Length: 240
Image 1 (cartoon, rainbow, N blue to C red):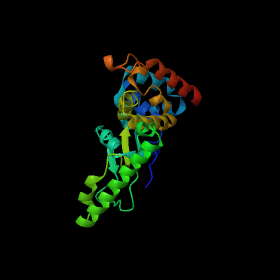
Image 2: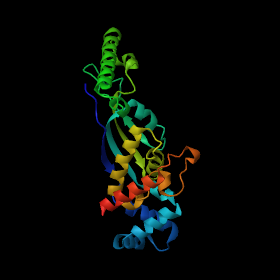
Image 3: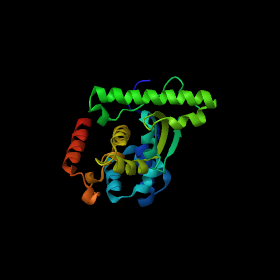
Image 4: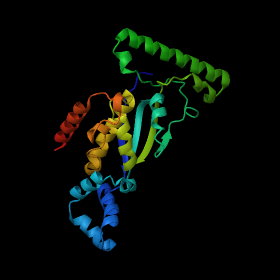
């Protein structure tokens, strides 16, 4: 099978996400009964209030809304990184139950592509060799369970992942950083754009830590804070 491209879709999201977060925060700070709070939220723009909540760092209220993504065209190497984010739910295509006898998709690193067509051809030949090894072990063992051990980290996987908004902001802070690995950084960027499109007041400042202050990487900084901030400004301007 050929190399694959990353694809991300926002599958489900908590309805009226910003209103849910506003209600959670107002319950903490405002008097009045539930009916009056709901009426105020429905009748008034909550943008300024949500921005204030963000600036206060009152992030627990973000846990009341969740986002579920469908993801494909990503590698098992990415999956290993993604599942380190423990406040999330994952459903992943099984290499035990799904046979790759007809071929597996794979991700070609940009660094390999940058070396030219000969390097890409060499990489593809290696994938083909692993496919042959896989099929050979399938035939000898009669199952996928142990044959899958010869499949590479480049092998494509598909998954459904759910995170709440607070964990998503944490995920974006780590994985949209320029020092993050290229594949998961690309994934985080696509997920961020989808989240912002649905609930901009929850995610306007989400992303690498340097968007909100000094770079948290210390002496390991990439030195691109100004560029990161300029790119975010251009993104936000384009949404207006």
